[in-house]
Length: 125
Image 1: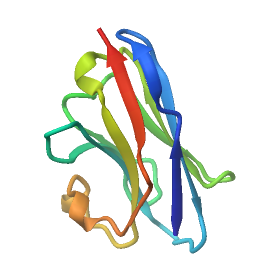
Image 2: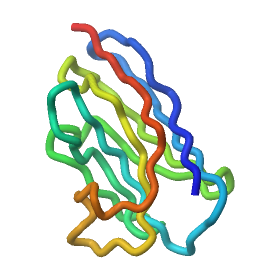
Image 3: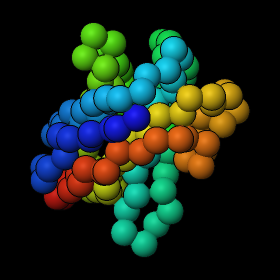
């Protein structure tokens, strides 16, 4: 599976961005797809996930109510709509796919099998 993340950039606080993660190659019947982020000097942090290709979504407390994860099955693409961006959202954002995730592991980065290359999001305050 190849994942191509895009959509990052430099924006002002309070504005929005939409990240995309296009998947190609091997497909799975019910993959879980997630976004993680990593800021300089910090550990990789869970942001949002779609569990097993369905409609169940999960968010970190820090982005809940501001970010929305969604997917377009026809395009094999997952999106992360980010609204009301703040300086603390500055990080490299990674998309990831897990083929055999269980619900209790949806926030655990090590449980995902495939990763995109990351896209930089910088929010100026």
